[in-house]
Length: 125
Image (tube, rainbow, N blue to C red):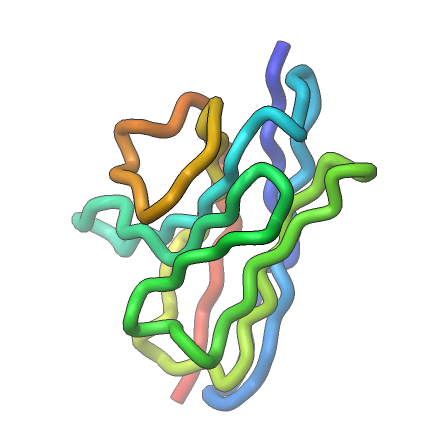
């Protein structure tokens, strides 16, 4: 059974930092590209960042470039998202997702197979 569990969300002031983690089990983590998405109430899952199988290639939404860094530890089956210089507009539910293969660019949410429940990030002004 595949399990995807995010952690690390919370309440932070504007300009602060948070590091999200996503622990995956039940699949060969090395065979899956990974992505972070975020959703606000009433909205859709918007792609934030993604990373390929080995971690050598990454993609970021324009809104987070230069502030967020995605990384993965294949030995620990874990995905990370370091978020710096947070803004109130970053407030959302953040979820990670797994795609069975290499990625060369951003993928739509529906292309990902496995999803976690999400972790809430709230940035106060």
